[in-house]
Amino acid sequence: MLSVVGAEGYADASVQDALERADAYRQAFYDNFTGKLDCYLQAYDAGVEEIEASILAATRDSVGWRDELRAGLGAALAHLDAEPDVGRALIVEVHAAGREATRRRDAVVQRFGAYLRQATLGGNGNAAPTIAPEAVAAGIHSVLHSRLANREDGNLHELLPEFMYIAVLPYHGVDAARAELEGGP
Amino acid sequence: MSDGPGGSAPGSRPPYLARTDRERLMEAVVRVAAEKGYAAIAVADVCAAAGLPEAEFERHFPSKEACFLAAYEAVSDVLAAHVAAAYEGAAGERWPDRIVAGLRALLELLAAESEIARVAILEVSSFGEDARIRYSRALERFVPFLEEGREYSAESGELPPDTAQFAIGGAAAMIFDEIRGGRGRELPAILPGLTYAVLMPYLGAEAAEAEMARLS
Image (tube, rainbow over all chains, first blue to last red; front, top):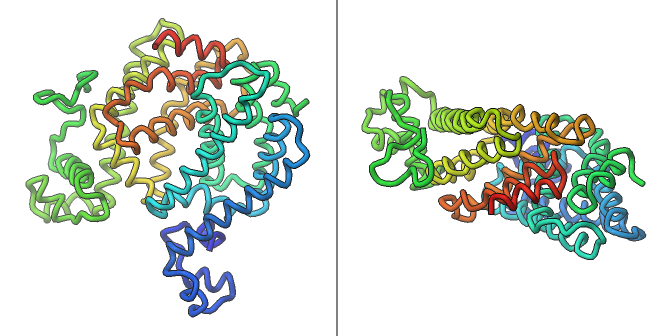
């Protein structure tokens, strides 16, 4: 379902397309889902969970929040590069799937903001204003959204230094941020 | 144009004033969608609200969606012109002050037209590709104002290429949160935080905080 939604757009994707992609029977679909939206929402949750699992796996040995964020964002970007249609379904098309989908999407972005807030709390950086994590999370999300919406995908991992720059800037200042932009410590 | 804060007070002229039949229909589709939700309205509702026969609607628009998207674009034009006027009106002042002037104008107009803003944000995102392109184009109009910050910033030339997108994305998310949370009318209250979100990618945290502190 996510591949079809990412390729065709939510509005144009049909249950039939998803069945063909999954090589499944209509009966099997309706045994599991009440319809296209239900299937998309369940696929959305599973897709997000998969990315979060890859982030967790990548950050297991990280030391310090910058290390952890670099590894985690790197894993997420690699995931999106491997499956750009899934990324588009999760990040772009979610807006076309109605209010419940948008609510889940908001929760994901808020989780990222809350993670940044928590991660940077114990840091030895500046005391950035409380608005910083939300602004950083939304800025990163917005760049990803624009790349995926315009189908400029496949090399999203090249954005990692920029993302680290903007994430480190509020807490550790310009010099540390520039070090991230130039490839990390 | 807007009367500034409290621009929607009774008796004041709304910034978006319908004149031609086409504009009356565009104004009506937004107003009716704000009341009932876009999905629930029909062309007949729009015509009734505009006080025009359906034949008149068909002369101007092939569909409800076309009418709504035209209205969306008209509202975006008004917003962009309003922000540009505030930014240009502060020519000669420091770049951060010009940005604050633009942001203040943006928040005041959105607050005055909070119903339209709510509909535009909640409904247009469900329209798919066409609406998304219009939305991106609307935001891109603000990029030149922001990019002047590259010259102002002490870090000029070394900022990441997506700096404007970081700033706009952060700002848009903050504004959307307020509008979706039903706090559209109180939008001017977020000016300090919004200022921080927009300036921080260009100036760094300390300078952005100093600008924020000047406002609160």
